[in-house]
Length: 373
Image 1 (cartoon, rainbow, N blue to C red):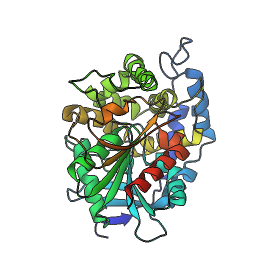
Image 2 (image 1 turned 90 degrees about the vertical axis):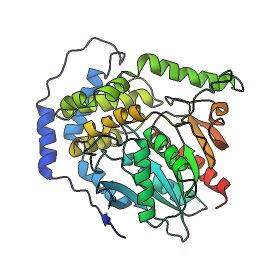
Image 3 (image 1 turned 90 degrees about the horizontal axis):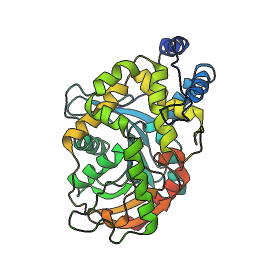
């Protein structure tokens, strides 16, 4: 296909050696016994970094990405998008576009892709684009690369792959990109599935009207997040370049910044991650090897300038609410914007595909069946 090429990831050995050298030169800060309340726990990070330096094998992780189906598409503007493309073995498959957010990556979908394709009665081709400025997608060289522009590029990718109709799915920034794809291309996008629902209280109604006690409890998580967890958001929305100087040069600094989010946004226990060290470090390593932490955080600045769209979405929509997610609005709010045909609650946190691939895959498959393709 035109402008699409197979892209085999092969990080140079010298880059892996440099990572190890940088880790060895780390100057560790002091710490007050705070149990994560001040940020990433020192003892936890030292253990994780030791594993990264001495036991983690990037080549194994690299192979997993390549084995799924790794490609790169050169857009009409010249910017190249890296993406995973796992095709069904059956004919007439419906394309499902799964879009990640920050600090995630396409690696979030490595476990869920085979689960969906194995268990779905409807054949599914799965496409997972890396957002511009993330991983092996090109870094934008000018301002303006917000969620709306990314949606336009991802639609262009789908057309280049030969797909006329598709379903979109996403969480975090992937949810905003998915919403824009549904809004901009109603003749092509036939359904939208979100595991972080972009919805706000109606301006002319009591925000608690038609909400359950359980939904109100989940809404309290967002209030806690606003009080204790949005510092990173404000920095990345205002001064991503300043942040980048430190994180792009220190692998331990980078790991601390990212792992704090995995620790706080998973549905886990104190001083534990609910996924393996290898999975978390695979994502951190991708940011390190591609030097994409600065360009990825810049998306917060770009989207801050864009704002959110509140146009109604006419396509069928499914909301998968994970109880420990950062934002879990009630169904009544979502119905002000979306054509909600499915709404389920699940245990788990923000990184649903990584943390709860079985639950999320069942939710997606249930939604695909409802579309009666």
